[in-house]
Length: 134
Image 1: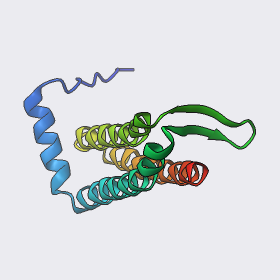
Image 2: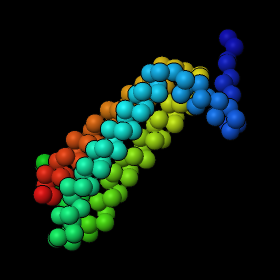
Image 3: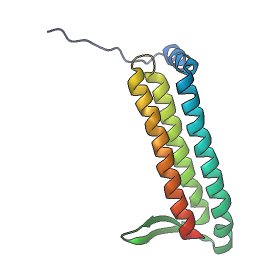
Image 4: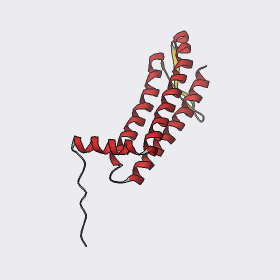
């Protein structure tokens, strides 16, 4: 039995080409645009609602657990870390999905769908944090 060796894509030109091929696919393009726009809009709304409360009180709840309750309170600038982490993970997922698109379209689409699911879960969590803080 012969083993297949898959050469890793480390060349920058190959990565750019793979992203351009992925971007030409309408499903990849619109799914990634919708995911990023949803994350940006939800993060913007979250910050718009929570930052004024943080400026008034100086402290915001950063983590709430229904079993334990409020377990992390920080100064208000830390609230920017949550949307930043969400956007960073989504951008990394979209890029990885684009890099994989040429080699394995199914894996690429699954990763992109997981980015969309992660966006929804992050925005639901942000909604609960917004309710706790307001």
